[in-house]
Each structure stands twice: as structure tokens, then as C-alpha cells.
Figure (spheres, one colour):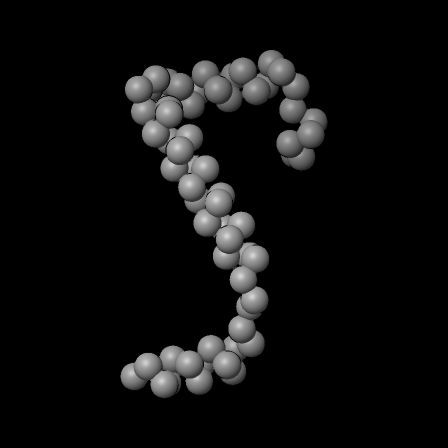
Amino acid sequence: MPWGKLGVGELLIILLIVLVLFGANRLPELARSIGRSVNELKEGLKGKPQPPAAAAEEDQGKK
């Protein structure tokens, strides 16, 4: 199911389940962790990907 079709009621139920599972004290820490992960992913995607052959040559040079 695409996220765009979730209504307010469904989102509140999901939030309530997350609150019960993790507890109110742990939610800010969980949100920070998710934010850092998203930022790292974005930074990683900005970098120029290496072709598999170039990555293998680089690994061989390190050994």
C-alpha cells in the first residue's frame, strides 16, 4: 500500500503502536537515529559510484 493513501486515523494507530513498543522516553532517540541514517544515505548517494572493476582494483591495492 502506498504511503500516500494512509489517512490520519491510520497514521495515529501506527504512532500509538510505535509508542507502546518503544516507550515515550525512547522515541526522541529513535527519531534522531532515523534522521542520521537518512542523512548518511543521502550523502552516500551524492558520492560518485565506482564501477565494480575499479572497486576491486582499489581493494587489491590496499592488501
